[in-house]
Image (tube, rainbow, N blue to C red):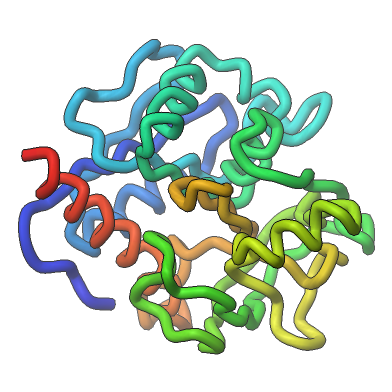
Length: 237
């Protein structure tokens, strides 16, 4: 795990009722060179110094209705949507990915795992594109080991949308051959929005930043975000 050099950009981690990886995300980001604060979902504005936003994993509102369906209505999500519309960097991890799709900030939808069972294990991922704020530390074709832990991680898009996203280079991460844990269409593990500033993935990079956990590959993703947030900070100062 390599800490970024330079000023520490502020990355706000949004906390919903049922979030349980917010502190893990905060700790990982701080170890990678960011200043990170946790922001409760009932706030109506992001901290003014926010350089990027992370929606962490967990089970917001107990996953009632659909995963992320209630959380998307939280007051702070309006501010997150405005932040994204202005070009701000937003990362959704697992439940955060589900919330972003429910909010219409990312394409596709997340459905129950094909096995209808909760899955928790390390998986192999392949990096498809590196010209993004979330994968700039990676190399194209690189294989990463990052854990998953979800029951509704099967990303789905119809053939037309899938083709469009693939052509636009928005399918950033895929599960390696034979490693798909949930039945996601085309082995998709991570999706980017059309403007390139909002990204969601089902694996948990915040749980792969310490050698004691078996992999530091998650630091490549979170470190890329810290680098991009720092660059954004430098442009606005």
